[in-house]
Length: 456
Image 1: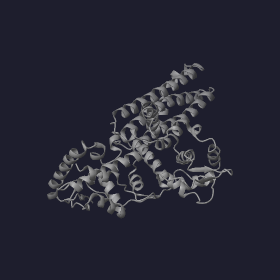
Image 2: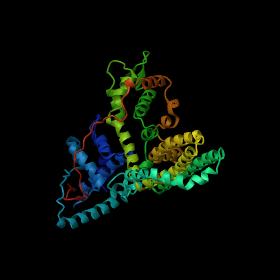
Image 3: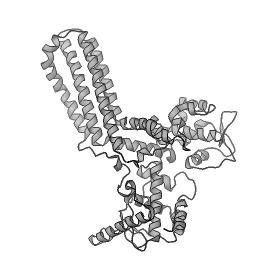
Image 4: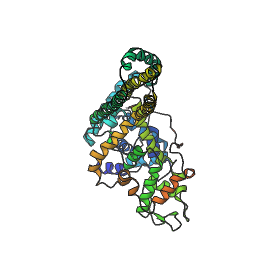
């Protein structure tokens, strides 16, 4: 291995400077990648490009590595500088997908794996075997449309109500209150305990099956904070508070904020905060928040975490959990509705059971809606019990995620609370974000001796 060359390649930055929408951020946002996954994917790309520079024959990137390559090519100045570090211009040549190319591409893939093993050790499957960040979550796609099944089940409710009323009329006529009410409330409680336990076990089993390099085991504090709160505003709170503690942002007597002229900008989030502050004047925090919350550097965290929830909601596991929860709780609900109907038909007081049925219906739909967030909630619990205790000594600040407002600077808390009270100074956390797709994707095979990738 050419250690000198590799050290130069590894240390080479693909970003010429901080910007609102640079290469790394664009790559992450277009593919719904987390920060850690993006950084590691770029490292794998650098490894591949190193192999392309030193190999004397065709090499082939993985699908994910090729996505990095496509994005880097758009930033021509950065790509040109990177090739100068490599000592060779690596051309990206699309494949024609002809049959006679198949064997050549397979040989290139085998050669790449062999060279990678020789230089870097075994290829990490998460970047070299999968074509999507979410595939290692081991969630099979649902074989049916959940919405269609629910429509059918809801349509069947009137028939079931008539059937239950017919079958249970004589039985209910012999059961008096308050015995039925107490028994029914106990049944409701038991039902919720059973379905919640079932849901918890299903998600726990899923998490235990994930490989250690699964991207959801490598989330940062900001990503977990959004998973916990669902609000991008908290990500800005976290960063501004960090800058205040580091004395890069100064709090003036007027309760305004100003940038410390001697402070250096060391990351993209600090760059965005700084760019939203006047050079020679102070500014209210609400104005900073309003400008910052829609920027891609903060929005991408929301996009990446929301996409996990969306992917989960399309899985067979989610559909099966939803149908089972729905079936159990609707069955219990039907028993109450039948009691209500029988009471009305027999001209008996049915106010209490009617109230219970209405409240249970509201709770039922709230419970079903919460299944979608079940994966995120248990992942948060897993971090707090298993992962964070082993990472708390690292440089990243977990305090705001773990402790909430109590971890904030005392002088910053009133500013943050004032902006939350005034909705006119904040932007909707789901508002638009910039970014575009280059509209191209590439296959996992190469077509040039310098490492050119084949693709569309």
